[in-house]
Amino acid sequence: MSERIYYNKLVWDSVPDLIREKGKECEIRTLDDDEFEIEILKKVEEEASALPETASRQELIDELADVVTCVEYIKSIKKITELELADALERHSRKKGRFENRSYLVWSSDSSYKTNEKAKTVVRLTIPDKVKREGVDEVSEEVFEEE
Image: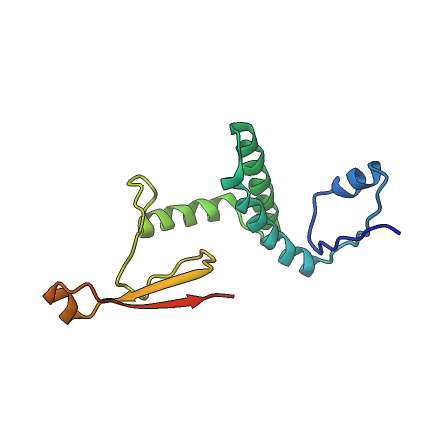
């Protein structure tokens, strides 16, 4: 009896052949257009999440190539032109800036700030005005778990 590990995810075209070359089995199905669109969007996140784990410059280049490949497929599916993307990059740069200042946000009192990051835990410290004025070290801490 062989072991089955269920992945249920989009894989690169050569993956089934690589599995079979090892004498192993796999089940593959072809995604329809709607399914592929959903899965390629998931795939770009998966590939991008590998970037911080790279151990060498070449690994980083290879992972960036994976991300770019996913982005190219997404552009094709959504019929996004180079001009549209360049315009969006310019708008984004004007609105949010770039990373020239290397600003690292430690905390903010602006609860409306939104992030795309999928944080597991968000800690919100509330420091009452009275405490700030008196120099007291008491704070109220709330921890929120995201699923």
